[in-house]
Image (cartoon, rainbow, N blue to C red; front, side):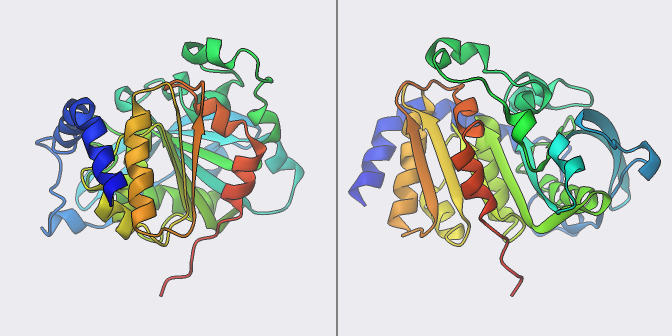
Length: 300
């Protein structure tokens, strides 16, 4: 327990503003409450474009879907990655959902500027981490990927971890899964920075929806100990750079997982990595091997 207490002391000052920011963003005035109100459990449905208008070739695509939450309807932009390998095989492909950072909300926003979506759109290192990554080989994720990627854009006025967005994401995965040749038992959630923090919070609200999560350079959750207990049955790949502010918060989450005796998590630290070291994870074949070995457990 002392490790977890030490983690709190180390990053209490650094995390005061980020946690407050996260909580504030999770409670915009026009969002449904996450409590037990009837509205919070409104039926959710998603309409994709007509099948003939859906992407059917390798590449990175952007289109709108129509979301219905009870009687309310609104469009949501979705970025879709279809790798060349998908069209060279008859096997069902996994789905990887990549969550964007804080400034990606809205229709048509450029979420391909950073995070895993940037590697789907163009194989390259994040220029902000160029010096630390200068001696690494070229990123070739687009050429080697064997999964379908989804980068949903959170609508203005909503946040990923706040009701109803977790359920909307779950429904989006199902609809994309129906439209393409996918493996329903292998859907994964990942994100970098704020997107990584959202992985923790969404997974807590959607038990059993994803086969594994991979938060990269994430903040800690408001209650790491409870989060670790809630996710004891979910495989987790946690990573960060040692030369970044999120190192202390990821250390805290690691300590919480250890205290919970979590049986299936990986914690990876890049000694020279900065906050933008996510390509080091996503370009590593061993990461994908680990991730795709995880399958969603059947509902009890």
